[in-house]
Length: 177
Image (cartoon, rainbow, N blue to C red; front, side, top):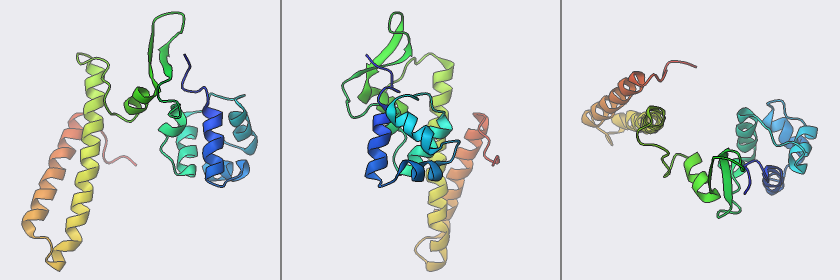
């Protein structure tokens, strides 16, 4: 059994090469305290403890989904320990299941857990919010062209308002920048 971080360096090196970037170019593009030396240490396996900010910056710079770095998806059936210790109680799942869970698909740990339910509802509503914003943005310019009508705009705006109220009730700050 392995931890998700095992193989991180190999995954990073593979995607960096596929993107046609040197370690220096990737470090410059990513920022977040990453240098050519840090990239080299990650790729060699000497460094496996990167921050979430660094993971996201690397993935964005490589134009890949962060899960491709975070989870050993190149071995989807490998069992990965995601919590606990290997010699004690732990949560261990196939990498393919961890990949889906990491992206908010499939696995639910505990239907009775308030934190589980709150987190999943926030994720669901934030996705709906993004879709509603996109819908309003699509309808707006089409009003003048006659492709959309006032009813479509009213419906899109009402949906967006409803989702915004729901998100605020869930403690999500929409006005924060």
